[in-house]
Amino acid sequence: MDIADLQPVDAAVVPRFAGIASFMRLPVVASAAGLDVALYGLPWDGGTTNRAGARHGPREIRNLSSLMRSGHHVTGLEPFSVVKAADVGDVSVNPIDLLDSLKRIEAGVAEIVAAGAIPLGAGGDHLCTLPVLRAVAKHRPVGLIHFDAHSDTNDTYFGDNPYTHGTPFRRAIEEGLLDPHRFVQIGIRGSIYDRDEHAWAKDQGVRIVYMEEFVERGPIAVIEEAKTIVGDGPTYVTFDVDSLDPSMAPGTGTPEIGGITTREAQLMLRRLESVDIVGADVVEVAPPFDVQGMTALVGATMMFELLCVIAARREKLGRR
Ligand code: MN
Ligand code: MN
Image (cartoon, rainbow, N blue to C red; front, top):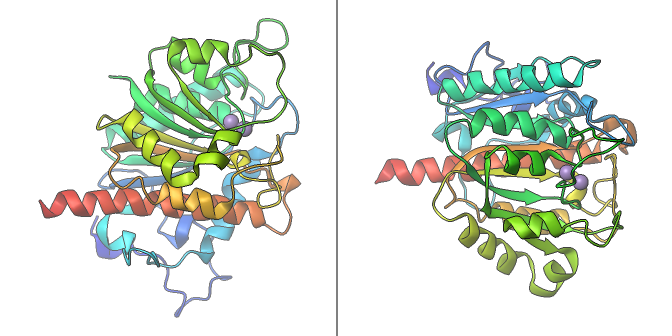
């Protein structure tokens, strides 16, 4: 498909409130074939242990993403002129069967990866990222830059259940999908189940940047360290919207006060241009808890920031 056919609907021709809502007003296409970046939805929250609703995230993020324009105001980059991007729809899910959903999500993302496109997903709860990583990291472990209030490296819940949105990254390390020495978590805070809750992750080599350290050192020092940790290798970026302060992102299932600001998050994402991002997602936007779509707008904007750094890297490599 020609890049000229993969442009967002022009808001000067069709107003932003009109038409069918797709990510960034991009064309909706049947497959990722020929794309550089495939934007897709993960409408599933079967891993949620408390306040469900992230299954509705992709649709609301699509709606609010109509506010994105075609250029980035800091870099001047116009991502849709650099990468072939489109909305490939939602992966298939099964709202009443967790294990079946994990298989469906993995299969859906595997199609995107097989087509040679970078999957850029909108969740869904954070358990969605496990089957995504099973597809993205099938042939080699990847590094991970993980924005979250929570470590999501717990072992089991409700007896011996290994799959909830509090466990995906423990499973991913166990399955060899993540290199724990190239894994950094930013924004961790909130009350814990027990004092050793993060001991397992730390023992594996995961670098945890708690919120207090983040405040002390600032977003730029922290993200520069994160870039050193993931290095030049293939890296996934996962952005749990609850990493942000709930005053700026209230529409989420597990809010924790004292979080990252949207501006700090943007500053950090904008510095990821040098990272070899092989996939990314924004998760845990839960519209039933949202206020006037503000969290969905945050989700859409963080997806745009991620798309822009992916495109910036492509542009730079293409110029070589
Ligand atoms: Mn999470
Ligand atoms: Mn979280």
